[in-house]
Length: 335
Image 1 (cartoon, rainbow, N blue to C red):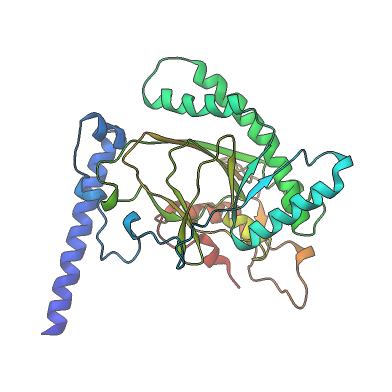
Image 2: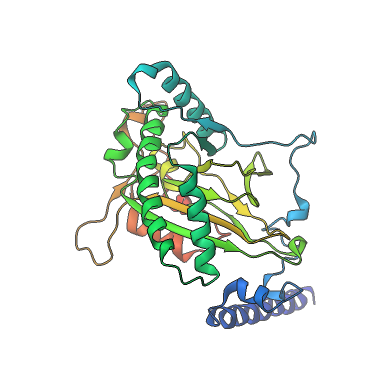
């Protein structure tokens, strides 16, 4: 009898999941996105986006616990202070030390005094807003090109600092092609009428080497730190840097790629621009794809490799074929 009831429950769950998938496809086919719901003055979050309190995969935003003591945790802030000047060797060592601690403990940090003018950051945010709000101005294309160029230059500096933080030569990660490919995504999150019953983006890690994020002042990004969700407080003029799975792999777990998510807000729209730095891979290339494993200089008898070498195309295929809430592709390449 118990076995029969279990089969019936499993069947009901499968039917429910199938029905939800059909509704999600129908929603996707409208090509209007969540903004279309807001434009239609929807006052309730549709059932397909609701998360049950019994869902063990995701905590609802209302379940957020900053710390057992009640104090609010914040991710580290790194002041770059012109790290490329040779006269500031002591400052550079301080920066490298701060980045090392952030990468080992958090996998996230914010950077200020990074060299990208605040006006460009503001214009990039407005460009994403104009795009989603159907403003016909062509200027948004110009700012996209300029912002991409500036972030590309900043990424080279950050990869140099990360190399030094790992005890490597400054150009090591750049030589590996860690920042050769650049994927830029603009996100537009409308105001949510019921933020307590849904999630903006479920918890996940990035498949990149690093991700550089520009966010507006509304907030919503959270980082999982010691089993607690921590708000990444917006800081005017700052950029958020988080480590991706590929950097965790080549660092042999010395630096960590951590789970993060976006919780919805009653105010909005929330706008962010994520730049994913990853290997350069062209579709249709006949050349062998890049292969990455733990960097040899980081290995020893006391610190053997914990990953096998990963074909980047296979790594990205696993990442793109999984759901956001499924395990990181790293698990497929562990020794």
